[in-house]
Image (tube, rainbow, N blue to C red; front, side, top):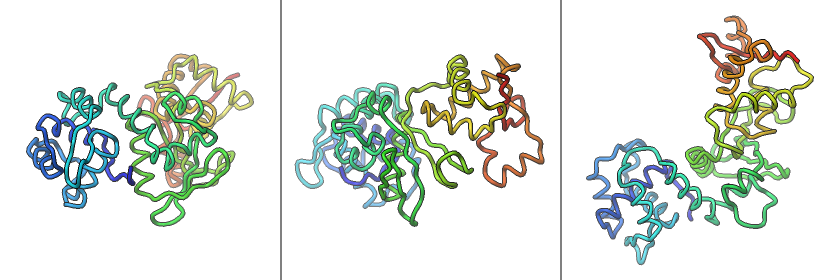
Length: 301
């Protein structure tokens, strides 16, 4: 695989579906039939310049959905035909669960992708990366911009790796589309990382909302000596310990506040305090309940 340039995996799926259905055997034919299909071009006009189109056909081939017998030619593989069968009724729609599973297997087993990105989350692994390995053995990375077009990824093993911005952004986007990764912006001086980094981490599970009993147990363990915990700090500490999705933690906190408000209460924030926090970027990390912004969890042990 070359350095990928296409963010939306649903668009890759759409290209494969149309290409297989219309038996496009060259890159030029694929572009023509895809354009004629009238699928929304969510990435803008820039997507259709000649050089950009080759980025799209490159990713179709690099992910094994087609081979390239000679320059400009396409030959659809069994993997491509399988994806086309899955997606024939889903043009323009988000990926289905079955499509997510197929893309996950393809992307995690790609050697270039492993070396460039996924392996950094499992730094001590010698073998292949699978979804189960990533979810059970994966660790967080702290990410910061170090130059205009580069990021540094600091792994759990203490090593730092320099990555090109566009490549990092695309792999991270793929991870979020496949429900493998999430990120959280570190806006304050927390326990370990300095200000203005992001923690990017493999998800241990894919909850829409962390179950209230499980969340309550986690809070009692992690914050056994605390009564007042700011929401951003709470989310960050739970990420380090459990690697739950940020939105799932927030939904779980709302449910916890509703079920056991006498023990786990989300405290309202005054406009004055909110204004002060918002200047630091924290407000977006708070939770809204019943029309009020909640900034702190009050715990009654």
